Length: 190
Image 1 (cartoon, rainbow, N blue to C red):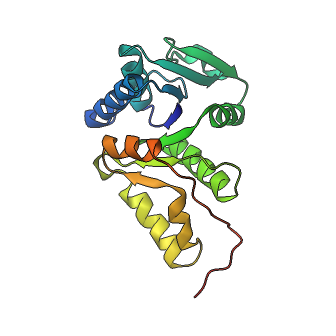
Image 2: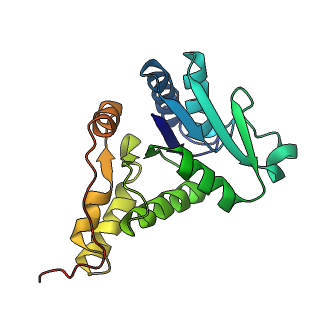
């Protein structure tokens, strides 16, 4: 499978996130999966790529050309260049069978919520996994719970993604995934 991993490019983060990224990459390679990622060489993004390449696995990095002179590109992979961030996300979406969100910042949040919105609207039925390393996404999950509680989202939206606290849960979910039937326009019973 082609596994898209959305995650941090920051080097300032706690090293436990870097270690988790490297391990995930190694295990993706061991299971024969291909990494689809944003082609960054730093942070969790670079860690996942280093992990998969260390074990001989394949990676496809998708990166806008405006990053070329910034010295941020992980080059030990197949590279696909785009003109825009939007084009980058579209290629990553099209090439991927699964989406895994590891800890990250604003770019990661944006990528996750776009993929989640597209799934909610029936534009894809691919697995979406939040890999909640060290409980990083607990505040975001609380925000989603609050939105559901206040009827801004349906309770059924929780079925559009899976929260994994361990790497084993990530792999178990994506390898046994059954598409979730969801219709945004169904009325909820109150």
